[in-house]
Length: 109
Length: 114
Image 1 (cartoon, rainbow over the protein chains, first blue to last red):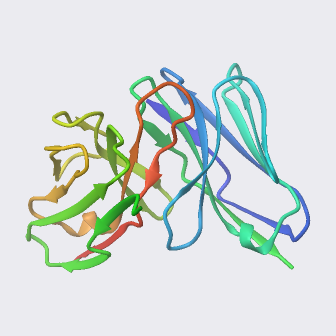
Image 2: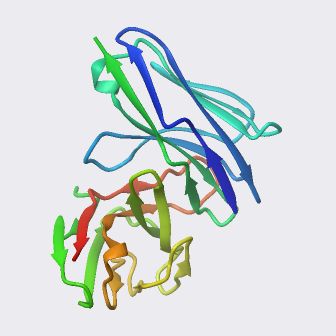
Image 3: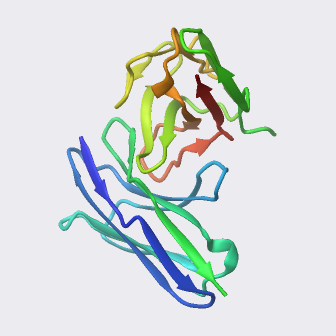
């Protein structure tokens, strides 16, 4: 099974940078995903890591260290619309996802 | 292109009643999933199907059943609803293959069992 931990809440100022950490313990790692979920809406895909290192996608970057069971999502140049929950999810060898409880990010003006 | 749809959007149900949540995708994805999302617990997998004709149990399968008669549809049935099944239910689909094939989520069904 999977055990996935991420902080419950984070607050940051518009234009700033926020880093959301995710640690996991897994049996059969097959990739790590980050999703964004606005209140009352469905989760939407942000990023995917399967090898160690940094993946950059515009204002969002995601990092993975498989040996440490650790990932982070970096949100740069924060905008008000980035206020949402961010979900870390680990995929197993059967292609099933296990999700962390999510980190609610509040962006303040 | 609709992607993935769910029905109903929301439902209030008396305990003990039978209920089927519908999920349809038009992306020809081979895999489909049902999750429930509860405050503080995140998304938990109920049942999944990697291909039409097969299903598997997730983390919290008790009280739920699914079927996968074809590629597009994956209904979730609560045989006799209980208040602890009050939740938001999301259906998702994906391609099963190596690489970053993400899951696409439907808009969700908000279910209240009284």
